Structures are given as structure tokens and as C-alpha cells.
Amino acid sequence: MDFIEQLYQAVIAEKKELNDTYEKQQNLSEPEQRKLGILLFPITILSQETVGSLMIIGFQTSYPINETYFRKGCSIRCLQGGWSAEGRLQELSYNTGVFSILDDDIPNLRDEPVRIYFVPDDKTMRCMELGCKLMNEHPQVEPFLAFLEQKNPSIVDKIDHPKLNDQQRSAVGKIVGPDPVVPIQGPPGTGKTLTLSIGIKQLIAQGKKIIISAPSNTAVDNLCHLLLDCSIPILRLGNEEKMSDRVTPYTLDGYLENGSDKKLLDHLKSSLRKAENTANKHIRNYTKEAGDEKRNARKECSTLRKEIRKVGQDAKNQLLESIPVIAGTPVGLFNELPKTFLTDVVIIDEAGQCLEPLAWLTASFGKRLVLCGDPQQLPPTVFSQKAKQLGLEKSLLERVMQFFPSTLLDVQYRMAPEIVNCINPFFYENQLQTFHTERKGEVRFIDMAGFGEGEQQDESSGSIYNSDEITTVKRITEVLSINPSNTIILSPYNAQLGLLKIALPKFKISTIDSVQGQEEDTIIISLTRSNSDQNIGFLKDYRRTNVAISRARFQCVIVGDSSTLGNDAFYIELLDFIEENGIYQSAWEYVE
Image 1 (tube, rainbow, N blue to C red):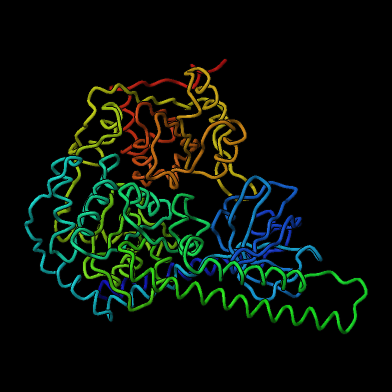
Image 2 (image 1 turned 30 degrees about the horizontal axis):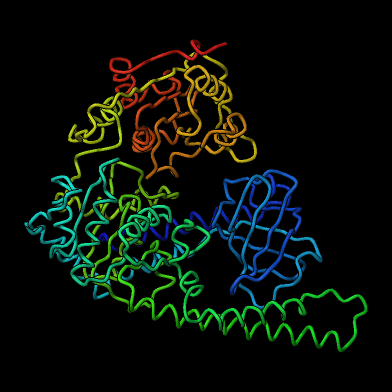
């Protein structure tokens, strides 16, 4: 089996795993679905209004919403009586939310009870299948594969720039050079995004058209922000609910709001609102004339929505032609771009976290491909064990780095020496240099061994939590006078996060997986696992620990159970290193 066929089989295995899980969930009773967190019911509809071509609905629950499934930007299905439609969750808080639906015939959702179901997004799987197909068929992908087989990267001149160090100048030289595929490894804090932004500016100066992409909307927006700082025009494509406020003016809707079609759109939207008011009007004494009026209003709504979409499509075609940088996630780009669209260079940031089929799908839109990321940080998320065995967890960046060395950005500007020394020997062969050698920092391990009752499992979600560790984390913040405004508390488990949010409401609290690309003065890591079987679960992927520690600028506090970690060679070495070079304490020292 060649590697393309193997990759395709891995995608099929992953798709089957996700479909089987979803099918099992659908066969559960409604109370079980509510307990699992995939159904919101009962809910109260707070608002229902048209914005552009979308219907925006606000709602409230009388219970906390389980964020394991329902997250900002996720797909949902809304049901009322015999009507149902898919939509997307735009906003979410403790017990309120907003979702959007694109449908030409939406009833008044206040009239009857409404249910909201979580729906897995199968667009990603469809895109991955197509990505595998393109590797065999797309003419633009063939030169990339041929170049990798040659294993002969070009020697190029460094690009001089006052903001760049030596390796960053080498990386920019590669970005603007001739090679069809360019791998760049950017460990934490090494200025990877800055390097890319300067490389993009150089390409634009050469008259090149560019696509920038990343596996997450946050990573795409971070790069967009730097380009906007340089006054580089962008067109941000994809799901606007997942974008930062700063890039919203550079989306299609943002350009339309300030463009020449604004008056026409305002007129169409005003007409649509009037038609919707008539279509959704509650009629106490129903007559034939009233029924005809509502039916005609619904038809008018459908016609007006089509006109609004046509204005948007015409504007998008014009923007794609005129703007030099197009930005979006792989799925967002595939959904929005014409399939024959071609740019000079495709740049994928956080490429170490991008599933390989999605990277190839994005690559098909360009004549050259730049991959920038760090294989020593989080890998792509894969659920199927078979898919992992077939290599789906390996990114395209990792595969390319097997053919020839990447350009390593080797000077980090974020971490104090004490913190970078904690990850350098384990992940980077001590190649990382520290720019701010004058900074003073600390790494502290608080040992939960022999303290409390250990971990427990949440009955609803199956996620792990550790109440005693939460109490200890809270006490640590008090004893060490840790400032909530410049601190992030991390854990790999959702159940632990939920309880941490209740115990420490003033602190920013996040999963390790969602914090990649961020940084803060102080990082507290609640490892959570504490059991006699020495089962460390998610912590077995050591790259997750690398990500967590490397978010810290000055102070990193790790809270965990050494007796649970003590059967793992990596954690034995890490704890020995901290004991010798940092601060090692027992949780008993923080008892009031």
C-alpha cells in the first residue's frame, strides 16, 4: 500500500469512528442525551431576527450548558414540531447562547418548544477525503511530491531585515525563494508568526498573490493581525462566528458593509425584515386572506434572500481578484474558493497541528507551499486508533522534515532561562537559545502524592477531575499572591476545567489543547491524574506538556502526583530536573 492509499484508508477509519460514535449517541433516550450534553432542552427563545442572509436566534437555559460538545462555532440542529434545520452556534456562555440558521422558511420559534442538538461537522471529513484524492489527481500537487522525492532543497540568500535574527532571515529567504516546498520549524516564542508576516510582505513586494492558512481560526487571525499592522490588505474567508473582532471588517460582509453595494443591500435587508414580520405574524382569527398574505410573504423572503446572496457572490469574486492575501482555515478556504482558484504561494502556519489531507487540499490552491510549525507541539487531533496506526496523526510538516531538514528558528524571546531550560533538553536537543537572558523566572512542582483522595470520573461525560488538586491550586494562588490578570490555569481535562472555573472565577482557565499560540506571565498546570494504576491518559503525549510549560514567560507552576507520573521515563526525568534546578514542594506545604 503506497502512502497516499494508506492515508486515504486512515481518513476512512477516522470517519467511521466518528460516525459510529454519533450513531450510538442518537440511539440514547432524550434524558441520556441531555445528561451526555448533546441536547439542549428545554430552552427559552429570547430573540429571532434577520442579519444579512442569516436568521439569528438568542436562547437561554435554566441549567449550565455542557461545553464538551457545544462550543462557539459548532454545528447544531434546531427542531420545532415537524420543522428542523442545521445552523451554527455563534455565542455561548454559562446558560445563554446565540445560533444562526440559513433557511428560507423559518417558523416563529417562540410558538412551540424548541430542541437544539449538537451535530458533528462532517465538512472536515469530506475535505480530507478530497485532499487524498487530489494527491493522486490534481496537477498542482504533482510538482510538490516530485520535489520531495528529489530531496534537494535550494541554497538561497538570507533576506536582510532589522527585526529579524540570523535564522529568521534564512527562513524569509526560503519563503521568497524558488523551492516548491519549504519547511520551517518554529519552537515556542521564536517569532514564527513575525517571520511569516515579513516573508509575506516581501512576496507582495514581488507582486505575488498569497493564501495564508492554519488549522485553527485563532492561528489564522493571529497572522492576519500582524499583516494588518503592516497595512497589508487581506480577505478573511470562513465562519465569521469563529473570527476575532479585529478581522471582521476584512470579511466579505465587512467589505460589503463599507462598499458600493451597501445601499442596495440595505434596501434588500429592509424589505426582507418587513416580509419576515408578515410571515411570522401571529394571527388569532385565521382567514384565507391572512393565510395567502403569509404564504406570499414567505415566497418574497425566499426571493430576497437569493438576491442578497447574489450580491455577496459578485462582490466576493471581485475581492478575490484584487486583494493580495486570502486567509482562512483549510475547510473555510475550500468552502469559499472556486476550485480552479490559484495563487503563487500557500503558507500554512501551525502546520504541525494540521491533518495531512487538509494540508494537501490547501496546497492545491498554490504554485508553492510553505509549511511553518513545530512537530514538538500538539499533533493533529485523531480519534480512531486504526487511523493513528495508519499515520493520520503525522502532519505534512513532519513528513516533509523526513525528506530534508527544516529551517529551525533557534532564538526564543518569550521564556525566562529557567523555563526554557525545562523543555530544551527534552524536545529541542538544547538547540534553543534565549534572547532575554537577564530575565528571572521559576519552575515549581507541587507534589500531590499522598495528599487527598486522588482523581474521580464525571458520571455524565466520563472526563477526569481531581477536587483535592483544585483546592491546592486555589491555595497556591493565595500563598504565592498570583495575579489573575496575567495568569492562565491549564488542565487537559474538561471536567477539571469546569470545577476550576467555579473555584477560581477571576482566572483565565483553558485546556492545554486550546492554548497553543498564547502566552502569559504565569502558567499554572493542573495535571489532574492521580491513581494507583499510574494511568496518565492524555499526559502520555509529552508534546502536550511542552505546550503547557512553554506558555509561561516568568513563572510556571505544575501541580501533579509524582507517584502516578513515576512509572513514566519522561516525567521521571522532568521531575528530577525540576527538583535539581527549580522548586519542588509537597501539597502539604499549602495546607492552611
